[in-house]
Length: 248
Image (tube, one colour):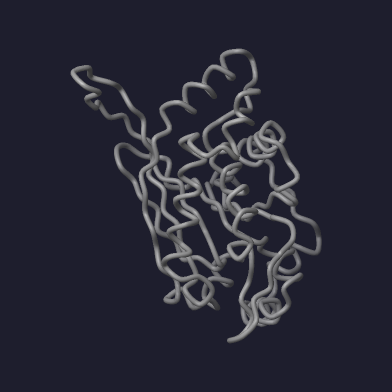
């Protein structure tokens, strides 16, 4: 499904911006919540929460281009998220979705993320199974038709993409995908660093993050503003989220 759709997208139109974000403070806070008995809170869900806030701040990022002159902005956020699932003793990359993600608070979003990531059971409907058994040429024709229908595209692939597939490794690890959304984000690996604060050594924790932007819809300056806003949320510098986190 994902492979068929990717082949129809002009991925050459995308540009990438990569950053490191300081997660020292929020990592400690979420770890404390987990020790207090709430197993759902995790860094991945927090990153997604900040990403959704960013999409709401910059509506053009939550959109789809149709042709040369038309951009359709979605009024809700549906997050397309590939996760690993075990099917017949084999791990596969399975497309999943969190619908109306902008209506969820951090705890509810964490629960949805946890369920998608940890539930090993994949249950496809009869319609889905039938569709996947169709010859590839018919599936591709359907995806091509769906691309020019914003609401159908939203149903199939959501409004934006979020991936944590590159978090699993050691040291720096940057994810560069083949995107088919206006904006996609790839959360990379976290790593520890020792930095000097005056004469004192301080342990800090950072995460690698890559954004992919469709250059047909966004220019580099817009992309940079989106990335910087997102990083400000993660590092708890932005007042839009600082007050919210006080209640955690």
